Image: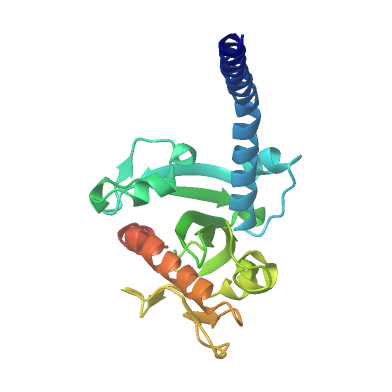
Length: 234
């Protein structure tokens, strides 16, 4: 009787594990389209935020269609690649050891009055995990028009402040080239930055490691676009 009871318990447990696993798999399959849609909307919100347009989950798609009028992919040589920019996984591209194989998305926005702004994605490492964002440029492909940053797990009140407007706004008007062609990126310096310095912003007090991670992210992401920027600036 004891052996029968143990067999019954093991069988019942195995069946329950299988049933629960199937139910979870089914739920995941049913929820995936909604999850993918939420990711798509959030991405569009972030791109719009980089051109200083605040979008909600309700109007993000319509505003994206209105303001993002063109998108394409280039390589490090500035050459156009046949690929949908929105579908490019920036994290996967950065993992490619051969930089020539990397796909670099560019989004072109047409703002009020016909003004153009060019948006490119960023991705890097903070203190506790990945950080990412988008930076937009004016038609000279040098002067920053807007910036949007986010993170996975930076410290609240410290590194997590990279996603706050007060930190992002000082990037507006900064330039990534010095003397027209020398790529210098934008530094994130501790201890105060002269407002007249076109190539630096203030770091986050108490968030030095995240600030430097963000600086490295901007530098390593934008240097890949250098040739494209120099070839297409206006």
